[in-house]
Length: 206
Image (cartoon, rainbow, N blue to C red; front, top):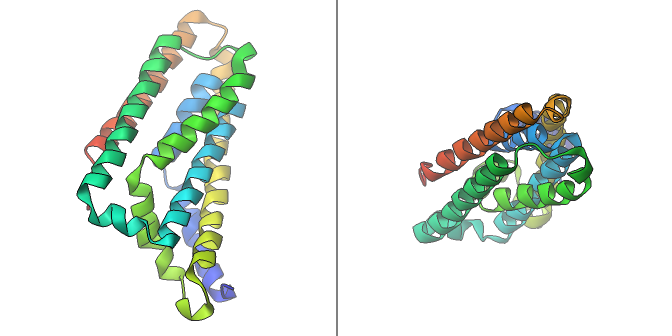
């Protein structure tokens, strides 16, 4: 059981983090621009699901392995870089997704959000740095506290990133019927994913 005072301190801090522009927000923006509002929400849900996996691993102690084994960190990081570059290439090749393909693209968007989050070792390192500040072993088992606090971050992230993606999706759907605009949106989205890949590639282990 987490004390009310701890929650009152944690929730505003978590919300501030959710509102800070970052890789997850930009990924959902790119998904919304290319695929529309619903796939953007699916991508946001995938990112939140990935965050909960990271929280679970951190609570079980696996995060320490990532932070102490440089080769494991690098393997996960370069998998993430490769996947983001693949998404960038796919966006540039295909342009914006037509309306009739949105139902199927929503499933793919969830998968993409999940995999992009899971292959970002920075997330689990962030979890290890942030959540333990609000965990009190004297209150009982640590894992339930990790999961509760992680759920707050995941829900907040889903709402904020989803809203950003929906905004981008609204703009993208207006232009998708224009072949040139569709192609342009594919290049913009590909550029966003490429920038995220470069950001992850040059990220320092510290």
